[in-house]
Length: 261
Ligand code: SF4
Image 1 (cartoon, rainbow, N blue to C red):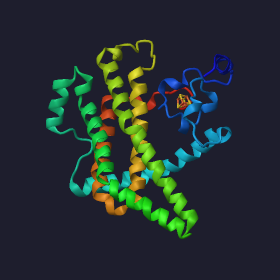
Image 2: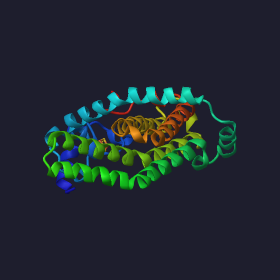
Image 3: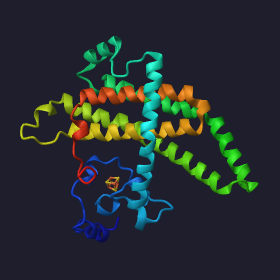
Image 4: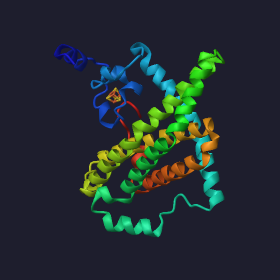
């Protein structure tokens, strides 16, 4: 960014101070680009910047509508399989006790890493399925069949992959920061009722998990034949969500500048 542009932006009274401290850094999908000093225009491709915040708000609202249905599916499967999603297995619990001093070995970190690996492996495994799906759509486009619907479906799938990719690694990174902060004694830093940085990081991770659950749920709705594979990913994500909420019980109520005010 040119110095002059930076100065102009820094002087914009509309800016929300510190909004970028607890965002997910996905400027292309952010609903506050107009009020953020750190908004990175270079990340915006093929988008109308004027309407970006409004369009992104609609985008996330639409995704959120899938969350409730996906959670119903997760709970249904868990009940059917006799899985208690809120219970920490003894072996897992032991792991947590042994490694509490090291954030990177904490149960939440290992679960987050497992999720990242599972997501990556799913896409590797399904590479040819996805390629065939794309080829089918292209063939139908060439034949002029249902052009509008095909483009919507292609966009939907692209969005789902983008959301899953964006958050899969970020959840691990944010939770490492949250756990490190907590184990460094940060929990005693709120004598003056200052919000804890670890809660802020955990909240960003939780939002990433919620959005990922919705995205996987959408994928399941589009490709019901992949339900068995997707369910194990969803169950792990929900367990991770529960563990984070247990370890950081006040994270959900952390107020992020701009986003939660
Ligand atoms: S608040 Fe939004 S615009 Fe600013 S850095 Fe974060 S994602 Fe980008």
